Image 1 (spheres, helix red, strand yellow):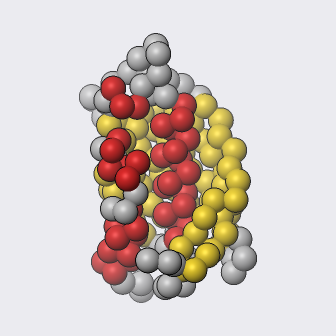
Image 2 (image 1 turned 90 degrees about the vertical axis):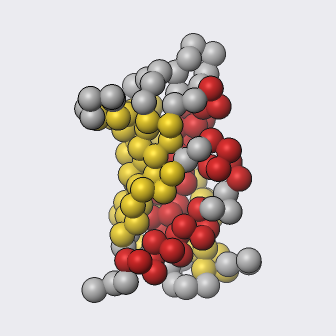
Length: 144
């Protein structure tokens, strides 16, 4: 059984280096082998002109949560970088949190394929899908 505490700490170390995620107030929620969940709160930093979560914020969340899911399956001393991703936006919301849930589809030596779902969490706990993403990552040497 993998040491999930060490895995969480590995992902958290990288996550805390992300200035954009700190600026937007994102929180690392959960890390498991091949999986990662991150929350992004509704603030004026993540809105578009009509007051809803900006598609760029949703796409960034999907990209990052997929990337961290991918990082859980590459060897120590490596990071990942996004080669490409495709996002479908399903709904927009003007309150609450959105949560990205990244999952590894296939973790290889040269590429890692992930998916991510972004869901809106309402005040009553109801979840509604906002966006879905498919992503290709490439493992690269860690340089910090």
